[in-house]
Length: 437
Image (cartoon, rainbow, N blue to C red):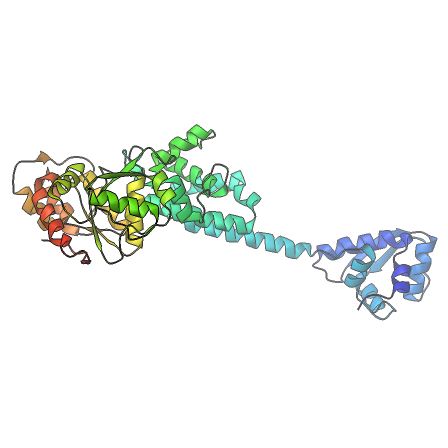
C-alpha cells in the first residue's frame, strides 16, 4: 500500500535528506535488514520532524538512529510501512541488496568458469595447455564483458567446434592446412546456429583463437591475416571457393534447379566438382534418398575407374584428405540417413582419414585387418612409414599393419571396389553398413 501523500511529503523534506541517505547506504550494505545505527547531522527543521515522528524531543545537530527503532516507529505511524519501503518511496527508487548482487555475480562468474572448464576436455589439452588457455581467457575479460547468457552461449559454441577439431586430430596433422575438413561458415552454423558465429570479434571466435594459439604454441593472432592462417592450420577453410568435392552419379530427388542440374549431369555421365560456395547456394538439399548407399573413396583414380565402368551408384571422392566441401557433403549424407561406405589407403594418413569419416557418420568399406592382409599378399608395395594412427573400427588392423610394415593403396584393389559398387548399383536401397566382401 502506498504511503499517504501527506505523510510522504512530511518525510520527504529536504532537511531529512541526510538521514535517508545514510539509512539507504546502510540498508544496501546489510542485505536490506533494518539493523545497525546511522549518524546524521540535521538542522532545526529536520530535528522537529524527527521529534514528531518518534514522539520525543530530538535536538538539532548530530543524531544517532537505530534502524530497528526507526523501522518499528514507521510501521506504527501513518506511513504504515517499514524502513525499507519508506526509504524507497522517499528517495524515489528501490533499494539494491548489494550483498545479494555480489553473491549473484559471484555465482554467475562461477557458473561461467565451470562451463569453460567443462568445455576444455583434458584429453584434448595437456594440463599445462589447459591452465594456459583458462588463464588467458580470464585475464582477457572477454567472457565478463559478454555477460552471463552470452558467455554461456559462446562457450557452448566453442565447445562444440573444439570437440570437432580435436576428434579429427587436426593438431597432429601437418596436412590439415592444405586439406580443410570444414568451411568456417559450416562449422559456425553447426556450433552456433549462425554462419557468422565465428566471425572476427565474436566471443566464440575469440575463444577459438585463444585455444588454437595454445594448441599450436603460437601467440594469439591480432590481425585478420593471422586469424585466417590459424583457422586454416586447424583444417578450417576461411573461403568457400578454393577446394572442391569430386562427385559422380548423384541424383538428388528434389525439384529445385540445383537438384535437376545434378540429375542431368548424372544422366550425361559427367564428373561434377562442387565448391562450398555452391553447396551454400544449393541450400538444404537432399543429396540422396534416406536409406540408400553412397560410396566414398580417397583417390580420384577410383572414381575415374567407376565412371569408365558406368557404375550407377553415387560416389564421393575426397581426393586425399578431403576438401571442406567434400566433408560437408559427407556429413550431410550421414545426417540425412544415407549410408556412406568409405575406402581409402592402408597407410597412416589413410587410417587417419577413415577415423574422421567414422566420426562424421560414415562406415569403413573393406578397411578391416582381413582386408589389409588379403590386399597386402597380392603384390609388392611401398614400406609403411609416418606416425602410427589408431584404428578403433578394427583394433587388430593397426597391429597387423605394424607387423607387415607395408602400405597398400586403394588402387591395388580397384577391381574389388568396382565389383561392390556394381552389385549395389542394381539395388540402390541397400543400406547395410558392414564391409562388402
